[in-house]
Image (spheres, rainbow, N blue to C red):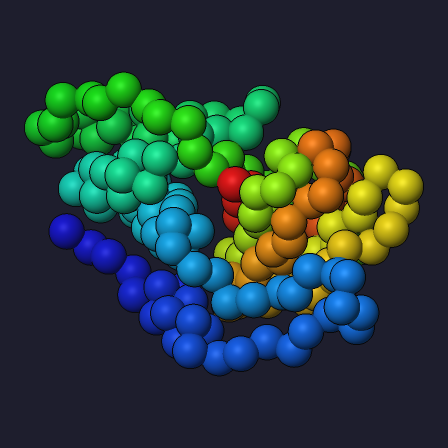
Length: 195
């Protein structure tokens, strides 16, 4: 089985580094990604690279990691666990029995051209920790910003090779605006996870 450790190693090293806090006490603080986000980001990185290399055993490993983290696709996104298991089966790799999915984090796999912004909207429950995590795939720098419906900035941070999270506890159950902006001259692929 081939597992690419470059992106994973960089992500794990980032766990030991502290990130600077946002400017005001009311705002969320960007932080190094913690479990299960780190596991989901690693699974997506391994799985998408395994697709490119047609590595059936790595596809199964990535599908198992993603499934174990309880991640599900966000609306309009492919179910990567099912896709990778089907691809591995088509390559003759033996599949373990499928388990039922549980509610949990949602993931997105996206790409932005130079200067483009992805505008997403997601609701979070009051009184529970809300978290949005982003990691680039390859080179490039993104800006992650989280805003309340009234436009108040909750968190703003830069994202490059190491995964970064914005985490806060909403006062009200309401939708938040998530902005991901490409700050570089070329295309940037990224993973985004919401809890």
